[in-house]
Structure formats: structure tokens, C-alpha cells
Length: 338
Image (cartoon, rainbow, N blue to C red; front, side, top):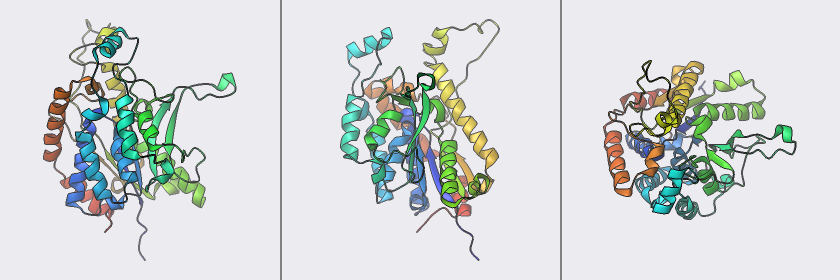
């Protein structure tokens, strides 16, 4: 009697340009274990993690898809455009975002060519935060977390949503970029989307089979890939404790520290939850430590030559990450398909 292979879920954290690291790691894994990408049953990515997620979801040939995703991530300076002085000055006054998303709309609109979520070849989950649920009853009107997805049988599915709109919704970083269609960065609640993906897949299985959520959870395995653990901290003393917004948002040594803490903290907490709920053979977190501080979302404000230097550093780091532990886990889990 053969044991049924669990459903394989691949998730990718948000992290601005740092998602080049994630994408290169996936490319290296596929090179070391051909069939790894073919083994994916469900895919999820938050914020810039949605780039590789959506490209793989749209690709019939996933090896070609991961190669394309690497090229897109390396070309990410083309997706954010220049920072015109008037726009930057408005950003400094707090009356406008630092970056317009016009160039990203055009770039990814051309990339995805009118595809909708139902056109994707993989069940795909993209977190985004809605600023107004537009409830008819005023008492029920509120902002809320949303999962944009194409999983059949779940009422919250968004099959007709354009793929480019899903991307622009989940990558709309507040302060840096304007909201898009009433949505902002999904990292505000699921920068690590592993738990969100787990919940949705379990719910789909429950609806399809009538099994309990507990039993359905035993039929999944997750590879969660981060953008590298930054050696970030804020040293505190009694004298430093009464910090104001200058320290939390405008410190040159750690700009947007308050936002970075939210994103980093949520990534690690979701890792803790998944590790606690799933057996070791059903969950692996690949998130290598970074030897130097690499800015993530605030790196969007870098000039192009600085951005290119950052991408070169990320590529060097990705090429040096030991893959032995994750390859051993994939082998044990029988993840790969030939």
C-alpha cells in the first residue's frame, strides 16, 4: 500500500528587491533537484514575493518560469522607475508617496498580458490589505486582510481578477507607493504567507472532502522561503526609551524601523506557528542569515546605481547559501516530480 503524497505548498515572503535572493534560491534548488518546481501543488507570495509566485503560476514550463522570474527581479530597476525631484519632495512633506506606480503598471501589464487569476496553471494565493470593505451597513465598514486567490469551491476566490492587479495590490507599500484599487501591501498581516496558505488549503480540503480541519492539515507540506534574516535591532537604554517618530521612522541608520519591525516580526511569528502545528517532515523554513544589513522595502527609494549594487550583493549571498538541509528535507518529503 502506497502512502498518498501530501499537497506541496511553496510560499515566498515579501521583501522588496530582496526577493531576488528568494528567486535565486529556488532556481538553485531546481538545478540541484530537477522536478522540484513540478512538485509544487499550491503557491503563495506576499508583496514582491508575488512576482515569482505569479510568474510561476502563469508558466506551463516552470523551469522557464523561474528563469524568467530571476530576469525580472534582476531588472527590478525598470519596474519602479526614476524618482523625479518633485515627487521626492512631495514625499518628504508627507503629502504624497515617494514613488508612482505608473511604470510598474506598464511593465507588469505587458508581462502578464491580460491574464486573470483563473488563467493560472497553479492554485495561487496573494495576500493584500483592503482599506475599505465597502460594507453597505456603516457599522460593518472597516479595513480588512484579504487573500486574492483562485482556489475553487471557496467563496472568497477572485478568479476574474487581473494578475497584474493582484501584483499591484499586494506591493503597494504605504508611504513609498500609493494604494492600488483600495489595497496596500499584504505584508501588513501576512508578510510570511505560509499560515495564510495553510489555512486556505485546509479549508478547501474540508469543503471538498468533508474531513475535519485537523485531518486535512495532515495532508499538506510547506516549504516557506524568506528573503534573508537581517541583523537588525534597536539598542535600548533608559535614556533612549521615550522615542518619537523621528527614531521610529526617520532614523538614517534604520529608516522606517517601525514598519520593518512589523514585517520582520510577523515573518518570524508565522514561522513559529507553522513549526508548532506541523510535523518536521511537513514544514521547512529556508531563510538564510544575512552577513550585512540589506534594506528591504525602503530600498525602493534607492537610486538606480545603488539598487544595482544591492542586487549584486543579494546574488552573491544567494549563491553562497548551503542547500544541503533543504535538499535533504525535499528528498525525505518526496516533493519532486519527474
